[in-house]
Image (cartoon, rainbow, N blue to C red; front, side, top):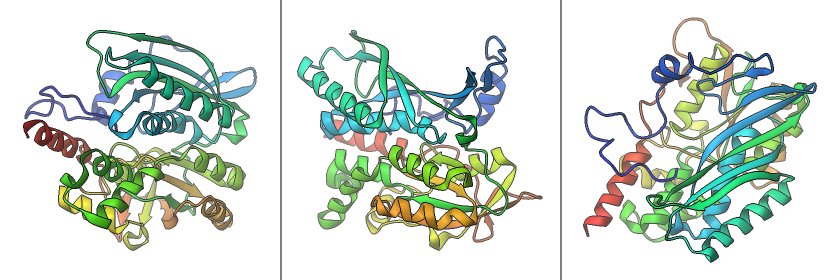
Length: 357
């Protein structure tokens, strides 16, 4: 989730916090993409977090993300969280992340020891996942502050037939959801702000433990490897939450997702915190959660492999021909893409309350 801007961008008449909306993307960004090149197989696309290049007969998935470090989580924990978020955008392509370029624009207050902890975690995780750090930039600059302290670009190289796209869902596919909606937002807010999120005792402890579930790189790679060519689409549930991810996948594929509300796993702690903060968990960012479209024949194999990793998995619905009407329905009712992610506003409110005390 990171930290939203602390200026006046949330005031009436100004753009909402978080990612730009689809209209702005399609009118201001998509028509202006520099030079056209034949080796770009997939360029910037709304709802798709990676591009694809053709290099020497192989597919290269590529993604760029900001780097967010929240000292309140501890430098080791926040570094692992930040790296997983960055690598996930390539992992959902079905290709294993293989190369990392990373840029740090460090706040002057960060010590060498603190940065050393962050770098140790990044090195160890990359080594374990087979990711080579190929280049980068590291410096301290006046005016830089937490949590956004840089950015990174990730590549994954593999065969074209192994590529999985977020917009690849097909009629007849089943939809699997890992972890559940709102987990990242609740885990972060309850860890940073404690009982100021409106719950306490064991409920608060359970909410804080959800922060250990916000890692999906290995889940995405396991799903792709287990399902083989039967995993047709994957998408991580980030800004806009589950409602946003479902709409982006269905709209991109030109199909309809029919979702069963009762099948979607929401823990008591997530429900309690979201109720207290007046957050819709379906619209809140939930890094670590994946939506996976998989053929019926491969559902049980993918589900079993993920559960063996200790990951919560639920079969939440099916893919049908689009026809007329909504791209996503829940128990027969349309589910629209959220206008904004409520976790940003909740963070800003809690931060303002903390600074005023």
